[in-house]
Length: 114
Image 1 (tube, rainbow, N blue to C red):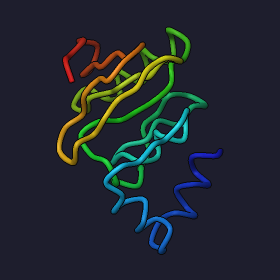
Image 2: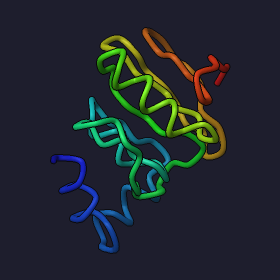
Image 3: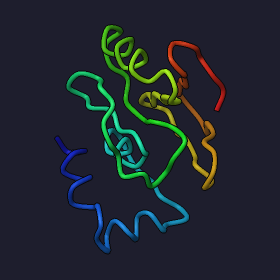
Image 4: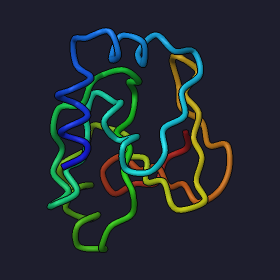
């Protein structure tokens, strides 16, 4: 719910424009998922429209094995970045990279490098 609310409030206004323009942006927890082109609905793992502020990957928190399998089935052509409790990722304006911690990137069910 927080993600959908953030998306609707931040879209097409000065606050959202400032987030999009920020060269350094720290997003903590599940709210980070709203920043990409694709955002993951935590209730069932289905992809939905994000804000598009940081492209190239869909971000999410870990979920049950069943839900993660469903999400990966639905995102065969999108890199899914699952950020665990110690995970930190960085977006340089074009690409994502793992900074530290528990991060797993997949395309479909195949593990890929960021």
